[in-house]
Amino acid sequence: MTEKTFGPFELQKAYSTEPVPDDFVLRRRISTAMRTLSERVIRAEVDQATLQHWAEQLEAVVATVGEPERRDSKQANRKLFTGAATIEDLYHMMDFDPVSGGANPIAPQVTWVQEGQEGVEGTLRLGQQYQGPPGRVHGGVIAWILDAVLSRALHAAFRLGVTGTLNIRYLAGTPIEDTITCRARITGQEGRKIFIEGSIWHGDQQTVHAEGVWLTPKSLG
Ligand SMILES: CCCCC/C=C\C/C=C\C/C=C\C/C=C\CCCC(=O)SCCNC(=O)CCNC(=O)[C@H](O)C(C)(C)COP(=O)(O)OP(=O)(O)OC[C@H]1O[C@@H](n2cnc3c(N)ncnc32)[C@H](O)[C@@H]1OP(=O)(O)O
Image (cartoon, rainbow, N blue to C red; front, side, top):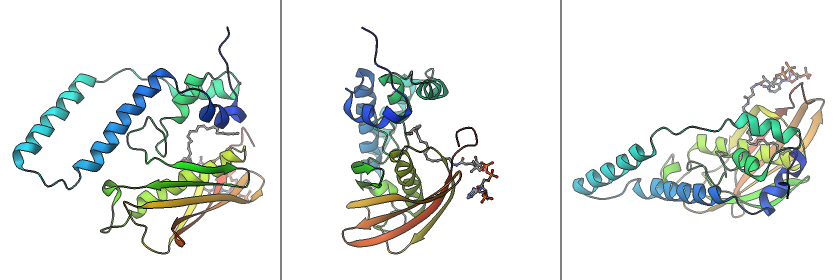
């Protein structure tokens, strides 16, 4: 049997419906453990001996991992655009994404509840490791997440581009350790320039507004 392959317009569907490759089941477990650890060790009230013990255990894991060879992600990207990407290639592109990638230990995990041409919506919860002012999400982390959410609206509408400009207006504090909602939608297009706006909400309160311009590369536009 020949292995199924995918192009850019099949990416989102295949990624959410095809079985997770075996190695990514394990990569996700590793990342979940690392994310949980990051959240739990921040501000942990423990004694010196416990910190010493944790430090030694974690240093031992780092030594065990060493510096492994890495796959060239450009190759998976090229295969995607010729319709030749395998599910493994798709996971290598998507699952290491620094926002919502299941196999990336630093990626805040977004649950996408709506993804379509009319826009995207996702929910997430950010732990103490993303705190700026006490109890609130760091402003830079908010920009990081919104860049990805607005980009997701671009992809959900089957368009491609890189962030050219991203403006953020912080309207109210965004809480850590509670569920927040992110939204984004395309508002217009002029040639290769695509205009996208987005927001973050805590319940009924909008805490952030974002708007930006994405540029489709000359080679694709
Ligand atoms: C189809 C389904 C797809 C599904 C998904 C597919 C694939 C997914 C693949 C992988 C997914 C994994 C991860 C996703 C990855 C990233 C997502 C997050 C997004 C990012 O993290 S991305 C990184 C940060 N980003 C950059 O790394 C950009 C660096 N930069 C440049 O690469 C250039 O700077 C560029 C290209 C921006 C412009 O260069 P250029 O040569 O094309 O522009 P040019 O001069 O021709 O201007 C043409 C007109 O745009 C106006 N203009 C120019 N620059 C502008 C700007 N900055 N802002 C607003 N307007 C601008 C001019 O004023 C003119 O306007 P006018 O025509 O009106 O005069």
